[in-house]
Image (tube, rainbow, N blue to C red; front, side, top):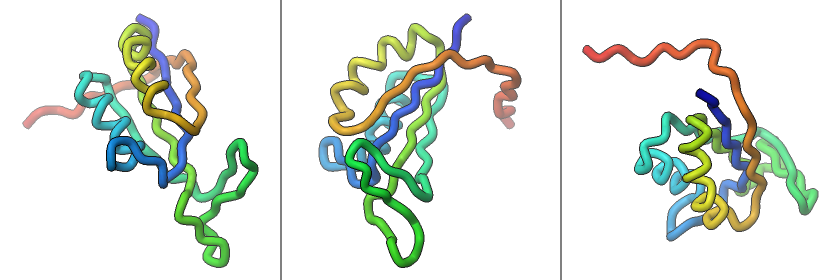
Length: 109
């Protein structure tokens, strides 16, 4: 089985249907039964406009970079990708093969 990692680079202020884009992406991934998704706020970064966004106190940005990472089977992400392309109007989306070296599912109590 081939596993892929979908990585989506967006801004904290990006919106999809009146909610933060990163939350909308995570909710859509969950609704489609994907294996997992994580959104991380970067402490600094810039994109195609070369404007540096940072958490430094003097330069505190209200639009920090957000990285959404989703890992699942190749086929599942291939089905999800058209929706991602529709949702992400200004950002970068990458897809790469990953090797799962350890996966310990949470035990049910």
